[in-house]
Amino acid sequence: MVAHSVTLWHPRARIEGGRTIMWRVVSVVLVAFAMAGCSALGLCEEPDGDKVEVLFESFELDSEWGYRLAGIYIDSDGVVWRYQRDEPWYPTEMRSAVVREADLLKKYQNAVRVGSVDGSTLAAMRQRAEGAARGEVSGEPLAFERSGKLDVAYTYDPTQRRYNLIYLGGSGDWVARNDTREAREIVEWLGTVKEAVGFE
Image 1 (cartoon, one colour):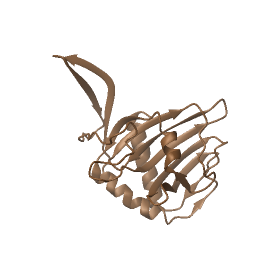
Image 2 (cartoon, rainbow, N blue to C red):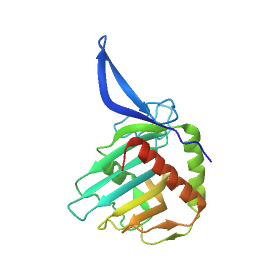
Image 3 (cartoon, one colour):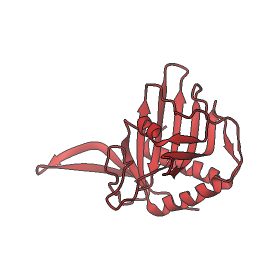
Image 4 (cartoon, rainbow, N blue to C red):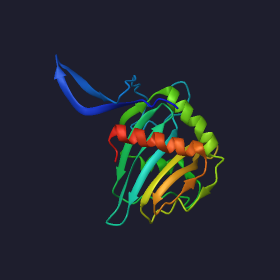
């Protein structure tokens, strides 16, 4: 069992002595929040040459009444981002287990950082993703004309500038099931992250 820690940032701030002080709201376990990334999305080259990558995402799409795509994603620095789109988004390669980096950048263009996860937990979940990648996935997880929820992990392919998707689980019209224990553990962890940052 891995202890889950999430640090949250509250949008309110106060002025004291000419300085703006941001109030932090933290979950049960306090961890240090590292301001990471060099762009609004955090998906860029770090000064030492390391690339910040998307590792995990949990999102939901409601196309029954209008259109709403919303979710969170976690990057390789442990930063948790939240986004919402009210205009349709479709990946270039439909119904496949890959998504181009440019497509994700478009998907996340309105993302805001809402917290972070500690490094040890993130490392443990990355290891679990390797096990989940070997699982059997049932159902039809990607169908962007439908509504539902989906949890995924990503591995980045720098030669193709795209991400390979690891389906972890889905519900609604995206009834996807990964038969590995690792996938179930990641889904459970993503649930705690979403609860901590207030994403319902």
